[in-house]
Image (tube, rainbow, N blue to C red; front, side, top):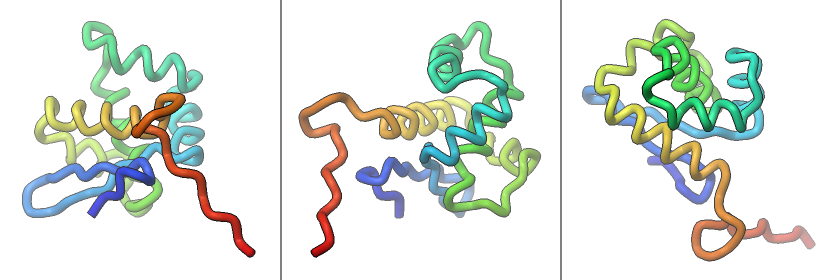
Length: 114
């Protein structure tokens, strides 16, 4: 099960569930794959008139990297069977990667060892 405190969301596909998350490493891979900064990627995801399916496939692939590294780009595209659901889940994971400055959306600080 996905842990929203860690920025994870669950993408159900058929009888399977996949964890999506945009960690720093996943975002770096996405920036490399799309050759654009993360802020531009966020803008693009909100611009459905100019959003290409190739971009959606790369975003899905990057969001899977932390928990499903074995899934390649073509396999990621096969998971996009329900585009409205996929886009909703990507949006949720993207928002969790960039929580607001305060309130209940912010990630709790990690406990210090000692």
